[in-house]
Length: 258
Image (cartoon, rainbow, N blue to C red; front, side, top):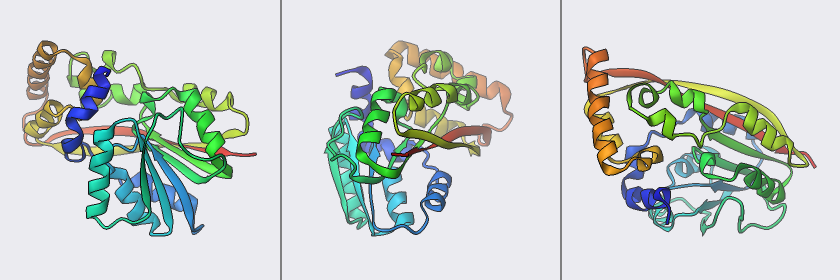
């Protein structure tokens, strides 16, 4: 089991509370999908289901959703969460993004939220092409290395940007898409969020390893970095109960054309 695998197994029960879930990309996806129903869809790297509940709430009961993740603890949390919320029409699968347990041409659309940096990107896109119907769309919500470096963690948390080298820039995603026959990058859309939080909330998120990047620190490194992060924030903000910053993400819309 890798460091990242251990990370997700440990934080599965607290993951939804630790992470911020953005509604804006879901609303934009709904706009692009339109009124086409029913839908057969998949969320790859679904985690504990925080975006899957929003997908159900916005796209309705006429969607069957395959929830796919490599981590069994996350899938157990997702199953409990969606079942408790009364969500019908979903199925969990433990699988890797480059070996999806889905039939050829079986999906109307596929989603992945803040997870593609864990995937072998070209292999994942090949699987998306295989499992999507012609005209089907893949929605990839993520952040670039450049966006990550401008976040409060990238600016104030020592070593965060250096350790997080798994993220892709736009040209890298575009190149990977271009190498898969019958896949086309339709568009990419930037999202920006003005955030405010108490310093203590940020420290709790870091201690709960809300980003897998924190699993790349050993215990001593992390504690030292956390102390320095605290001092950096205090030096830059007079009011540590209102720490403000801008988060940035990007949504890629990719279509199977043939």
